[in-house]
Length: 196
Image (cartoon, rainbow, N blue to C red):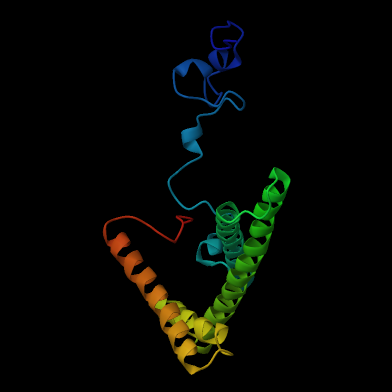
């Protein structure tokens, strides 16, 4: 359907029309406009004050918990699948399939729940540390929250597991931020989307 070659095309007859179909540019077939006018290269916000807004505590918490739970469910389910295939119970196919499914449902939800709890504690502590520091948002909040999360998660196991879990959490957060800075120094972006 070529509307640009018709003699009764209004954009040909009326010079006051904004844009013609037959100028050869890539046009939107629905609105008869050049899409390059819509993207001016700047921030795409309704109000200029929206560019300064950051994700709220609830948005960070729910995305962190959901992502952690789904990853834990996948890893735990894969672990249960491996265990069920390695040590199948029963001699018939139905009993072996049941053994594999039991392994998946035993490991998957428990691992997912554990990671979800860790994400809940981490997001809450990260926000709390940021509030206590006067609204400061930097890597020290994250490292402190990860250390405290590890310590709280193993708080009933004794002093040595608490120290190990705290060091592991703080070490992982430090390694993440060091890797992020190294990645950003090479011109890439790891964790912050280009919203502005």
